[in-house]
Image (cartoon, rainbow, N blue to C red; front, side, top):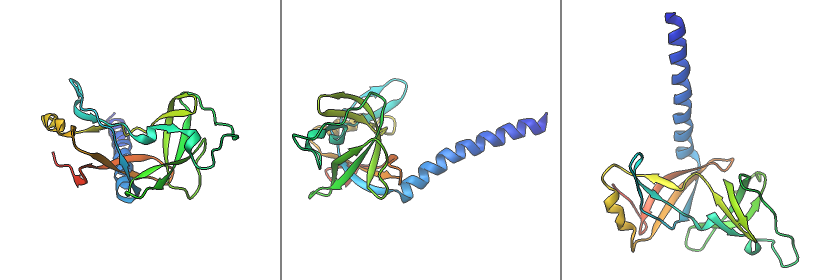
Length: 176
């Protein structure tokens, strides 16, 4: 009985350690990109203080992407589809969507997302980095978001999995 209990505990420790280890590995070794945001400052009674983030790459006008023309057909996506958005560095150092694909593109700097819905040529995509949790009680300080530019440094794994590495307020690291 004791061996079974220890085996179950060890199993769950390995599983939890694997999740934490993978996330830490991604944050330390993933390609870093700077993304502009469109923040909202909510509070959730169960989750605490967090910032809800929106990104320009979450609303992709596919007619304006590289290779699109008035004669080329616009790709069609369904809600829940996995997509890979290729990113290109802009003059200001941030990254923007340049192409979109239904499958990963080897060697490309890409972020993996899930289609929320499509309206005409505009594709709405979520990436799993739309919330950033902050220490309890510091949410009031994020009224600081009003009038300030908030950017996010995101680490990307080779398969496009994103993780928020750092929050920037007016170009400087945010401290809570």
